View 1 (cartoon, one colour):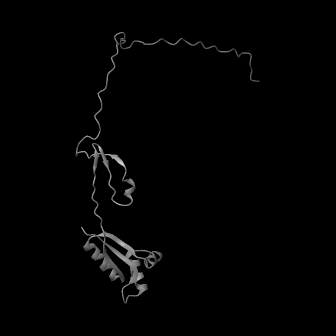
View 2 (view 1 turned 30 degrees about the horizontal axis):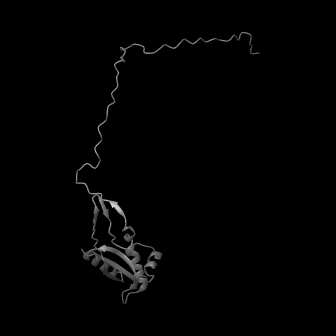
View 3 (view 1 turned 90 degrees about the vertical axis):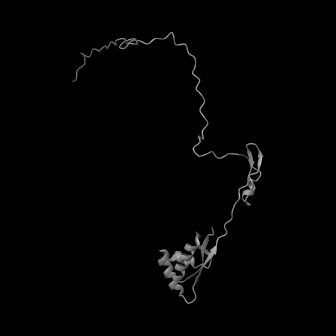
Length: 167
């Protein structure tokens, strides 16, 4: 699929007033004057990208009605073919697709495959080993039986304060 971008270089259409084009674009983009002035800096600006042919034509026609001279440029979309040369079972070497990825060309990485839809991604849990304990020496007490020692009654001694007065 061919994609297009709308490019504007800050030039009005022949016969269009520069100030009128600025006013029309400010209304069209709903932007303030400093932002519109940035459009007219003379630099090449991409106003919209990744458009199909019909949408690109709509944008071009709308901007030209506002008085702006725009061009529709076909985008250079680079098709990337992923090649994975196998080294050894379970290992792959990544082939660089551009200058940035060339730094990773010597990386030896594990070959992680893609699981089938609906498959379980987690390893199965190992069976739990139940320890062999001899509990035959223990018994359970009947319901309602006190299982512990009663705490000893604490003796509270009240000091003799009869010799004290408030006056």
